[in-house]
Length: 302
Image (cartoon, rainbow, N blue to C red; front, top):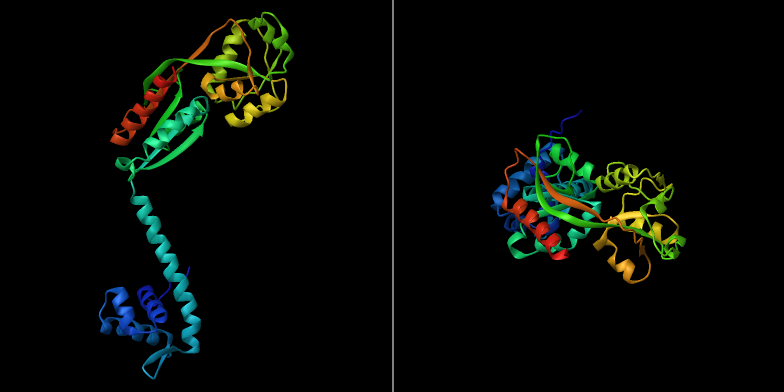
């Protein structure tokens, strides 16, 4: 790999002189003295081996070599300016947070909280994924905090903070599903029905499957087994005779509009919600605010 011998500072100064067509104006823009600017131009001309400017009637004009080199100098300046912006972006405090698909509704109140003036300096990076994926990313330090469905994730390096213990889950279907014509629907009536399930890393669906299997029921998995988007799964339920298992608040709008219907079984499904962080994580104001905002969201949902 060739190491460039040209001084990038000479090219930056050259770029400003080209833009201003003046040593004096370029010096003012760069907050340098005119002799310093002239020194950089002279050093660049010595490196190139030819003149880059011609002085005619008190103005600077580029030579042909100067015109050709000016294109490279311009690109280098803008790339360095972009790199500088990127570095400043990286210096900004960042909170990397994840919310599982089941509780994605919490995003509606958490994100606006971080748009308030006292958190403007914090860059909130959100991820929506399955509970097990979020737990894994917190463990791998890819996320600072996560919101997941309560269950045993069998990891002693993580700390789970209870946020809610009674989030209502419902089984939904198309309002035209023939099962809704029954006077009374029992859990056994779901035997053999197709469910749209996300990846096997969904904690809420594992809870549902274990509950149904404990009742001796068989569940078919829809061909859309790997759906990892709540909105898309709701749409798939609307258009076909498949079922899904979702948080009650995430389907209220579709139910009120007659696009989805709750399967009215006598069984009550409740799941808990936890915040998860690494035990060795130093909690910050941003993390505490994120967790308290989600806890408040769950409290306001009831």
